[in-house]
Length: 206
Picture 1: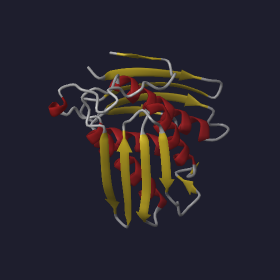
Picture 2 (picture 1 turned 90 degrees about the vertical axis):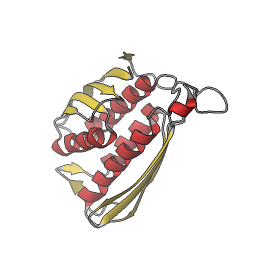
Picture 3 (picture 1 turned 135 degrees about the vertical axis):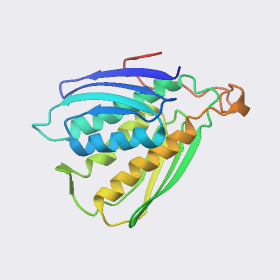
Picture 4 (picture 1 turned 45 degrees about the horizontal axis):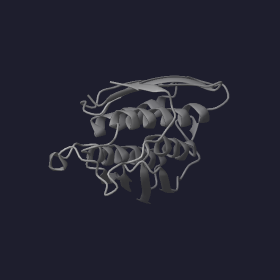
C-alpha cells in the first residue's frame, strides 16, 4: 500500500495529512481557508490521490504560514508514500485549459526538488488571501515531495482560473508520474539505480 501520514507542528501551524497514492481522488480537507480547501480538493480529484488534511494555523496574522505549510505536508506525505520510487513512471505533464486560461505543467519525481514558476497573476487578492502565497505553496510542495516542477501559465486573465489551472495541472502530472509502470518490473527509474531519499518531516508509512 502506497499510503503515508505526516504531521507538522510549529509555533505557526499544526497540520496532519495523509495520502493514498492508489486512491479514487477522495478528499477530506479543513485548513480554515476556503479557497485553499477548494484547491486541495481539486488536487485530489484530478490526481486520484486520496487526501486527508487538517490544519490549524495563525490565520489571525495572515494566510501565508498555513498555505505554505500545507504544501510541505502534502509533499512530504507523497514522498513517503513513494518510498524508494521503484516502478513508477517518474515523469508527468499536463496542458490545462480553464476558460480563457491555459497552463502547462512538467514534473519529474526525481527526488531533486526544484520549482520553475512562470506565472503572472492579474490580481493581488484572491478569496480573501494574498494571491502571491500560492507560489510559496508550490515551492514548499516541490521541496518536500522531491519533485522537479515546472509551471508556466501561457496566458490568462482571471486569477482564480490561473491558480486553479496550476493545481489541476499538478494533479494530472502527478497522476502520470506516480503511476506504476508494469514494464519497469519494480525497477527504480534511473540509470543510477536509486532516487535518493529526501525530506526530514516526521511521518509514518503504511
